[in-house]
Length: 190
Image 1 (cartoon, helix red, strand yellow):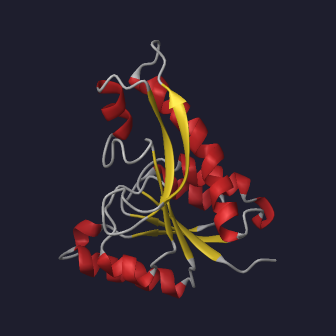
Image 2 (cartoon, rainbow, N blue to C red; image 1 turned 30 degrees about the horizontal axis):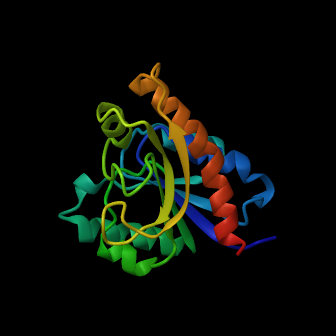
């Protein structure tokens, strides 16, 4: 049994968390997910974590004087759980220096566009409103920039004339839910 421990960071419903957990039956991806870090009390991912028997650590940044204090609390929780890797899955915060330094080279993010196109918030909406012909999913290591870290894998998706922003989001999530577990397994077993 592999003893790599991972944390998943999420701010919302947790669909990528669920996809990772379903793909990681019997630690098939090469890690044990020991912690969910959530910055939004009441987010759907918290209930999903409970359903999978994973500890949900809810740390509300609004209760801290600043980003550094917030991230020190996050790092403390990660170290207590002996976390080796962090997978960002719909975590809607920019990771700062405190967390980056503690887990340098061990934080992976998923982004719903073909980076470097459409970084930051609402990437699906950005691509849709720009009348782009293609978009997709990028999985990358994070660095101090916003969606600028080294790319691990990408998958393109044609934007159909019949797509709405909602159908495009659904189609992108289908790719995310398949691609992210595959990339995690590849990275942890290389």
